[in-house]
Image (cartoon, rainbow, N blue to C red; front, top):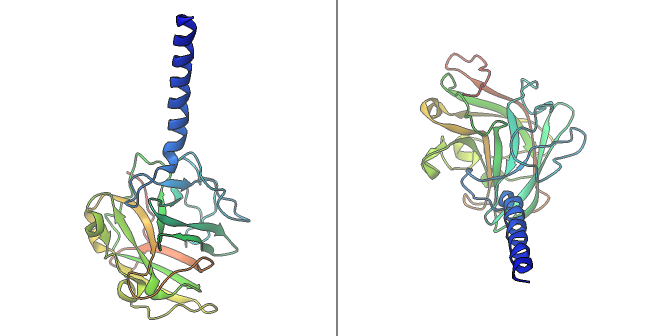
Length: 232
């Protein structure tokens, strides 16, 4: 009987380890280090949600990028009290839609599909894109994220588009050109090439249903030439 109990105990312990491993992907942080990813993306719909982490996205046409053939990205959504956003590729652009606001904010962005590597920003000076939607410019930060440094590792700063891109408002119908100086990322260990944070920190709330479209996302050098991002 003792032997049977021992076997049952061992089986239960093994099961606990298995389920704990399966839940680690849901234990996420807000600093970009442990993130629940949306790695399988339906180009006709949205993210399929909760992928296994890394390696996905290689078959996606990244419609938000000027170079839509990139195969080095995954979309990830931060947790640890944050809400959730959905990502969908459309015809010539991509859409980020806030599904829930959690503790009043959402965060995430475009990370490397191979999570053992980081982005090479050594030649990048600026990030440019066009944006439209219903989210308030004061409620949206777009930047580049370093693996190290916390808020100090967000380039150019953990600030809204009003500050980072000198955009006063976002139109629902008209595209607005954004240009962000990310020169400080050249020597960084970049884990998020298009980091987004939606929050009330800069003067405007976010709400479920808010969205923004992005197209012609590009990374350019000091001479204005496109830089094709690679992993290192």
